[in-house]
Length: 317
Image 1 (tube, rainbow, N blue to C red):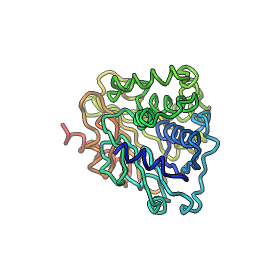
Image 2: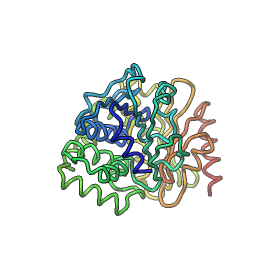
Image 3: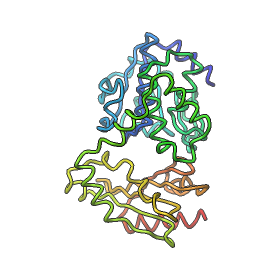
Image 4: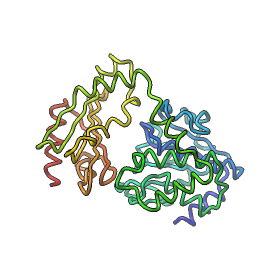
């Protein structure tokens, strides 16, 4: 399949690159690295995202070129969907993007059932960035400093700074090679993890007040409400990384972040330690992800949603 993807890349002349809504470092770093590779190959390429680029990722090389209006999909002979387990994850333009003649999907979510004929899927990979690193080695593209910076950012964010169980030998090997070729770990980490806005810190203070320890202190929960966002002037993007806070408490096996959306839904993000499979929890509600990191959306009030999640957690034990 990799050879077929490489053939499609070589034959294609005009590419649309996209990723999921609620952008994270893996999605953005992967998009930008792929875009730079195509540009260096003399191809025409556009990155379209439904959502704006979060502030902490705007330092990534090429990020100023991302567009948020799709335009005429007839201009593209290849669509590249990154870090998405299904096409709907790209947002409101999913149907139009699906009409592009040739679609390539590169993704590392175990819940990906394969929605493209041309797919590079590996649920054991740490990140889509790691998969792209493998692909670029096969293509033998010029691994410029900017490409390496984007791929390193993709890998470091989806591994939680190489702390998650998805971090393997190949992950560290890829990261080391990217550093050798020009990525600067300290500079990248400072931009991502040490550039908080006052609004994010104010939101964090409010969210920490909601922490609860449940199910014999094995599950730690945090809540992001619309009221907290209004009071602090923060946006949903400012809550990225909050899910990892309960994991730092000794004895906690599963951390849950409940994010209140405006359409009477809650986004439920889950993280776990060891072999506890939270993808099975998210899957009960139409979500997905990985063994140790998954998410879903559930309609209802917070007590109803919390009760459903706890029942599902008990069901996997």
